[in-house]
Image 1 (cartoon, rainbow, N blue to C red):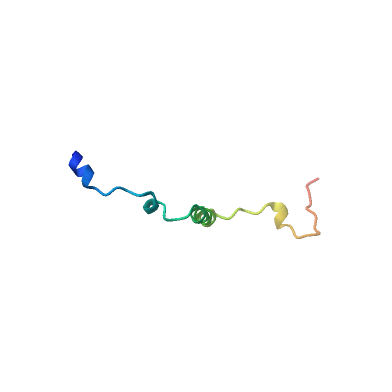
Image 2 (tube, one colour):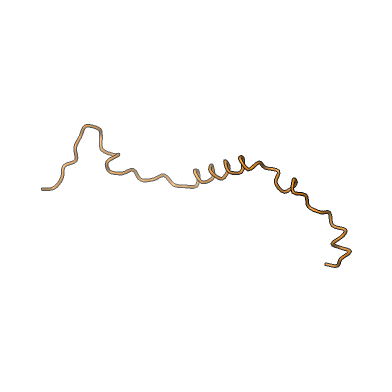
Length: 58
């Protein structure tokens, strides 16, 4: 690119690049992470009904 071509191009402004507030950007990233992460398999203890004890092999 020659010097004249460089001078004719419009300069970039910072406001045109960052039109989204950081708070909204972070919220969008958190939402995308929550949606794209598969659910965890519950622990065995979580699956047991309350008040019942697990039997253990003797």
